[in-house]
Image 1 (tube, rainbow, N blue to C red):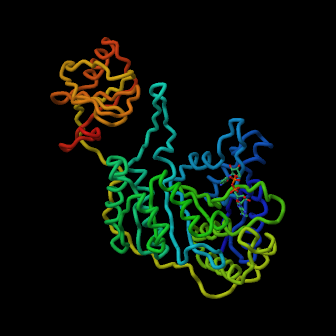
Image 2: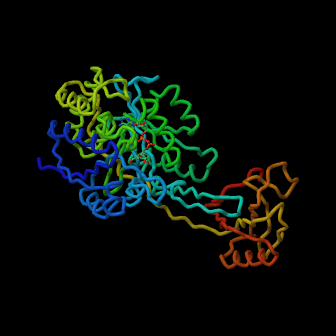
Image 3: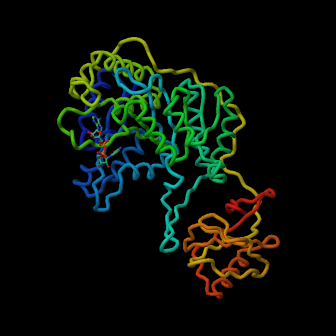
Length: 460
Ligand code: NAI
């Protein structure tokens, strides 16, 4: 079999030491890959001032697969995170982490084997934030139908490929009815295409509680970005922490695998680093490449090594990075697999639509104004009627002013007597301006299929 070229970014801190371990184990296991080394992080900044040089991005794009060691993000100096640059630049839409109990890694739990699939680009991580008044900041939480579809479909495909039984959607759709509601709707549509895999959903707070009481009930979790960020670290904690947490960032055209931990500058160059997480990331990469036999071989050697009590210092052992690696190499070829792989089944022909189109009717506008105390807004403007005002989401008009903390940011909801145009909204804004009110933000209110495409205020 011809060798596949894989980009290897060793990173900095303990990066080169743990990557050396992967190189040795892969070579001994005769994995058919050849490495193309590329730089990122501190080394790259020192060489060219750029944390992710163009050649590195080109290498990943060309080879489509990369294994990455940790990179230090210098504090201050305006250096962008290498990981975020790579993730966004290559549209790596799914972050996949495995939380699996390992022998001889002592934790409160056993029998944990959870695959966490986190949406990696959208949600509040789109990075669209504004101050709207001196006292009120806003972050846009963007959940899209195609973005959700891509990551959820990936979760089901992985479940099928790895012989997993159940996919659970983690959300907060009881509160974020529109955004998380969309994620959950898409989940249900996609789940219908995989009748061979059980599917269910759980609210994120309950999920956290269940994870720290009965984690063995979960198989595959799929989550929007923010919940995924938090829950995946929680899962890493359940199985023994950063030293054993691998991950992969998956895109349509390329994938980058890396350990969850950082560059550990406190132990760099001392031979103390635990290469388990990066090795597990390498195993995840081999599975992704379809090199399942090699993945299984290395997984078994690693498991056998840990079970025999050979561990690095962070896990309570005394082996150095290279002694631990020697033991894994010596254990290559030990039987008994704990990797599950089954034949892929045919996907059904009908597929949920990535993007939909709907006839939308513009029926109103939410005009946000900066004001100290309840503003005096025009009650009627052309075809618009002021229906309500709210402060931090709670209705403050009409009716009695509730006893709540008021900030200088009021949402004034104007509803029209039928379909209106954007010109009508401009007219509304100029009338508001003429009354001396300082509007700071506007949202259009639409209806489709007889339903509002916006949320109601608390108390509306
Ligand atoms: P860290 O994960 O590097 O270290 C936290 C603690 O865990 C340290 O005590 C360290 O010695 C230990 N540790 C981590 N990995 C270990 C391993 N494989 N074996 C044994 N002990 C290990 O987190 P920290 O200190 O917050 O970050 C250091 C640098 O790494 C920062 O510049 C940060 O930005 C960067 N970082 C990079 C990541 C990446 O490239 N994927 C991820 C997280 C942090």
